[in-house]
Image (cartoon, rainbow, N blue to C red):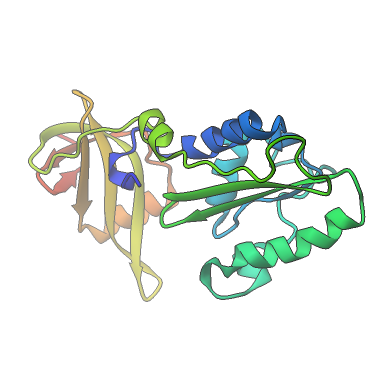
Length: 218
C-alpha cells in the first residue's frame, strides 16, 4: 500500500495491470476480452485509472459497459459490499450465456487495496481454482518518490485539491515534485488563489515551496 504522496505517477495504478497479467499466467485468460465487466466504481477517477491500465475504452457508449452493478454511488450497499453486489448481478448474466467470462475488480483505500478476478461459465482446464498474492510485484512495479517536509525552492504541481467551506473556496493543498525528483506536500491559505485554482488547471505549473507552505510567483 503506497501512500498517494509517494506515488511518482498519480494517475497510474500498476497493480491493476500486474493483476491482469498474473491471471493470464494462471488461467490463459486475457481479462480484457471478458464479456461482462465491473470495474470498482467508487469514484469516476477509479474507473478511468483501471480502464487505462487494462487498455479498456471509457468513451465507447456502444461498447461493453464498465459496470454491471451500477457502482457504489448508484448500486448502493454498505462500503465494499458493492463488489459482492456486482458479483451477484454478474453471475446470472454469465449463466445466461454459456461460454462467457466476467471481469470483476476491487479497489479500496485511495486506490491502494487491489483485487482482480475472472469468472467463467466453464471450469478451469488445469489445477482448478487459482489464487495469487501480487503484493511483491506491485511494490516493485510502482514507481515511488521520497517525501520531504523541509524543501525550500521550486517544485512542479502534480496534483492538488481545493478545500471549500460553505461552498466557498478556502485553501489549496498540492502534491508536487522538486527538481531533484523528490515529493512535497504543501498548502496555501489564500482564498483568492484557491478560487483561481478551482477554476483553472494548475497541474504542471511551477510554485515556490517553503516547508509545508507554497506560494505562486517569485
